[in-house]
Length: 217
Length: 292
Image 1 (cartoon, chains in turn cyan, brown):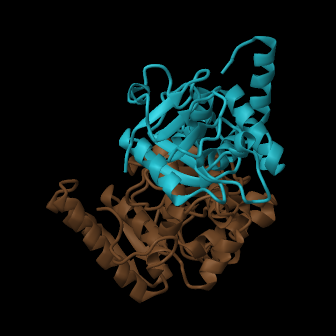
Image 2 (cartoon, chains in turn purple, blue):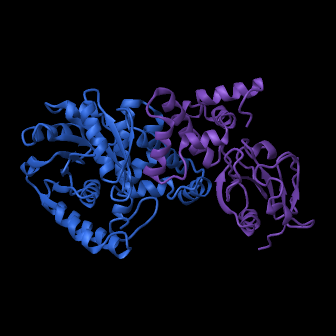
Image 3 (cartoon, one colour):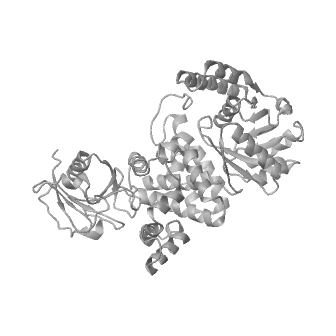
């Protein structure tokens, strides 16, 4: 399977920031085209796969949706990144109901050829990781407000009790509470359940960002 | 500095109780392993010997230390054998009535200074303490699975817990080489209050067809650096245990994330309990105690 790809750049990419080796690996002619954030996606049935970088939106925002028949050679993707931490090695590859196996295979070949780990998920808000971790961060922020334990003890509990490399409070604060607000707001818009509603501390951070104060992530 | 010398472990034939007994004996405390099921105690002893044996093979423990730790452990089906204990840690079935009855029986056996610690992961320390005549001597000490490997203990006072009892539990935890964190007496304390809903969310993601179990686990490990994915962890803990955790949390918290997902219940009904049954979200063979 060929792993050549061309890139259509737009604005800043969260998955592949300036200097990322993936950018240097692109070629002018290739079977796979990769649209980075800010670039306007254009259908191209001649490609083995077309990849569209996602932020908090669904792939359907770019492709349109048609009674569950959407899909073809287009896939969304996002390389998981906590705020401004360096991007992880994990790429969530987003498929639609009619996405072809050959397009998934071509996308995998490009991303795995660049040394990235690929998981495949359906086109849902938050994909896999944010769908699962954001409610947990919300709960931890609420527990902090309610005095269940100190932030340090919550983080220590997760590191020692579960072997996590960091705890929920330190991680969500490092990633930016305003960013957490943006991600959870996108989840809450679709799911509408309290677990996804931005936590009070995230709302505060977003409000301060809007005022031009403090956390602007 | 702890004044505790002798520790009793109730439910020592179970996975958690056996692990707690290892922590205690390894740290130099005379440890009385109590369980009503003699066969379970025999199995736990064999697993403990295997665990210590692996620890020696891996250079984590000398052969002399292994022999000394094993010599400090005695097994009994007689609750009266706990009469000399300064600290009794209960890790019996996660049921309020069972724990309260046990404490009431311990009241008839143990001296006044004995600290009663509950390893409950879901129940209220205050409610458990209501089962005995000395609620001021009851404290939460929640070990993490596998107890013999994980250093953390959540130490939680109930409403009636005396400062001296809390301090004694804290001091013993440190003397045993463990790391205590203080939590309030709330459902799931810190760890399970965060973990149980998170694990349920992972099950719901699989049930909703968002991704396969393997991809959910790979995503969480790859993105967050966790050693185990949530579905691997549920398999380790047991799917039936996850149901029990949900049934303990949900009626108290009414948090929809704490309710047992339908897929989880179906898998338990099918006998897919995780590692212990050989099949859960993954398939397994072998029954050796984890780690060593």
